[in-house]
Amino acid sequence: MADKLTAVKGMNDLLPADSHAWEWLEGLVRDLMRRHGYRNIRTPIVEPTALFVRGLGEVTDIVEKEMYSFEDRLNGDSLTLRPEATAGVVRATVEHNLLYEGGKRMYYMGPMFRHERPQKGRYRQFHQIGAEALGFAGAEVDAELILMAHRLWQELGLTDVRLEINSLGQPAERAQHRAALIAHFEAHADALDEDARRRLHSNPLRILDSKNPAMQSVVESAPKLIDHLGAASRSHFEAVRAILEANGVTDRISARLVRGMDYYNLTVFEFITDRLGSQGTVCGGGRYDYLIEQVGGKPAPAVGWALGVERVLELAREAGLWPEAPAPDVYAIVPDANPLPQVMSLLQHLRGAGVAVQMHAAQGEGMGSMKSQFKKADASGARYALVFGEQEIRNGQVAIKALRDGQGAQRLADISRWAEWAPSLRATRAGVEPA
Ligand code: ATP
Ligand code: MG
Image (tube, rainbow, N blue to C red; front, side, top):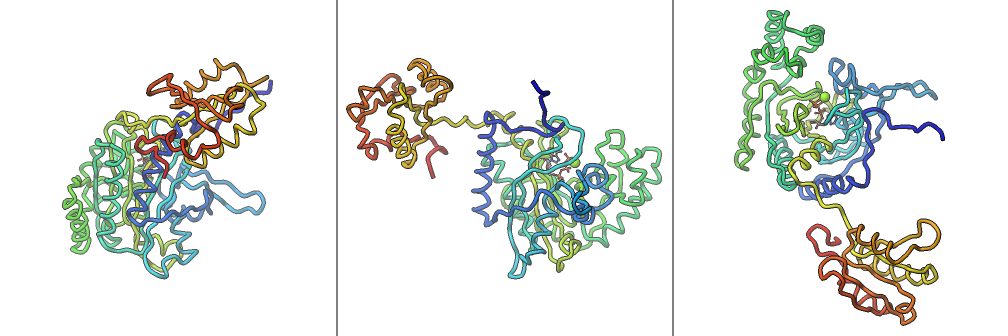
């Protein structure tokens, strides 16, 4: 046999045993977005490298060391697998002039790629769900997005997620703070690691985002950006917080919270849990009022967030919130292959009537014994077996046998009158009812 090929390191397969939990989350998100007026956007997985270099900032972890970039051999273009989706959404917004008639609220779901050291909660292909509101300047939209994420935790049933928030102010305020920051770090140069020393003059704010435990105290004692905010920035921040407070959402100001990309200004926030070890940030976002013009668009404000699907689902698993695997309503037992055309046309009618039907199918010679078919029916989790025995079929009937509640009970039903009895086979469990 040929050597087995395996997936790329840090990139995972999502197998059928777990995919229903992803669908559960995605379903909740779609409905949440609908209720908040956010529409789906899907942008390419590959973008010009320049988009990320320009958008995220050259001196950032992502651009310096995490991007999957390659040359398109056919034309020499430099391309990159998207490490995040905000830059692509902004590019698409500008390219298609989406803001010409006012602001746009959008959301996306999909894979992102970062060349990181793989570990629990940190992968090279991972998935984000994100929401972006472009063209809106007011604090109410920052708050709307935060409240929307908060509601998602509630609807998922997650309780151990806390909100940290900060303001990065405006460029002029940042410039002031930057000088103070450089002076502080220069005075403690011996405490800086290599990354920090390199970034001291190019991007000192990034040092605050350091995950190096040895640097925690020099980072904690650094001058705080929030102390350099002018009146307008301060009042924007307070306006966001007042709305959160009115909605019973508690936040904690974290002066160190600066986020990993350079495009943020004013409000930034993260939702963090202590239940996932050091990969505890499940969602992060903020305002990015200057990104649109940086990508070549007419200046317009914007704000958004992205959550890590793997981390959110891991947290749900930890909390015992893993949804039940889906089971068919009905498993069709077909002892003999001859009546299959008639059997399958009934099954199609049932499916049309909203019944989830799994049919026994041959896995070798013949359809298999009744015993083995019943075993499969049980394992499928179906609540009923439809048994298409020779005698029943001859009478135009099928036997419906209960496999769960009232196990063993059996009745005969007329095949031609399927429309009358099909609805009684449909699941009525919450969330399983067909839409
Ligand atoms: P971290 O601080 O953990 O590196 P980040 O600040 O780089 O996260 P963002 O760019 O803000 O992350 O992405 C938003 C969310 O996407 C994160 O909060 C996290 O849940 C998730 N995420 C980021 N990188 C990864 C990864 N390599 N694997 C899995 N999830 C990730
Ligand atoms: Mg990161």
